[in-house]
Image (tube, rainbow, N blue to C red; front, side):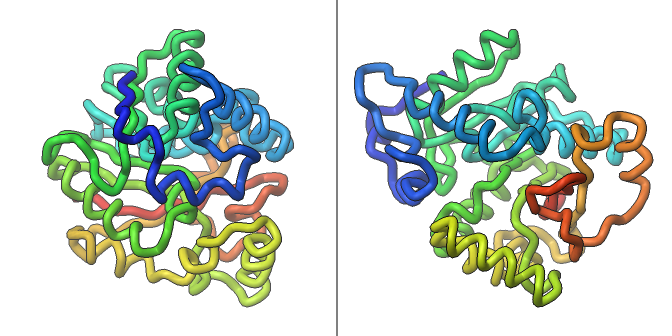
Length: 277
């Protein structure tokens, strides 16, 4: 785990998250503090009603298993999780691709310390590093997968292109970028779009609506990816269905415009977009 003193007071990538949690993600009360990592872990457990699985890793697990099942010849050697917080969705990538070197970055020291301890307690080797996703400190073409979950709608609209361009830069040819996110407004019914706008407003989410207004294929191609390499998927929850039913479900193209997509409800499904380089 690497912490950078220059990032001890994070820039907007984490500062905007103050609204989500008392004290925000990055507050430190004592040296080597892990308080906010503990708070985040428990807050997510309480607020997701068991839908994210017993270890809260259902998003990462569902998506990693989807990649392994759908792209059977794809064997990533290095995987990067952007905005990993305490590593809930980072560890399942190592679980699914045990030979891969997996990295998780965030700007929050308390969350990274907690993530490191949590991974070691589970016997999972993850490289956690303090880093801003807008300016990755990795060489060009150094990863096979760049992933994030519930991250892009937490940052200002102007920073999203920076993150996507950095993802393109660090991906190797043939690499895969995937972001689990809120479904976009232009792919939902007026009612479902209104519901998410309502939820964002009353949950004090300042960038929810502006993210959902984006044309995802446009921002991905503007980052450097070829238009015909854009992809998006609706992936069922591994935890909700179990192994057998989940494998049957991914044989079907699931609709974006569904009340289970990106909503905390029984049978939740994850909306994912990205591209292959």
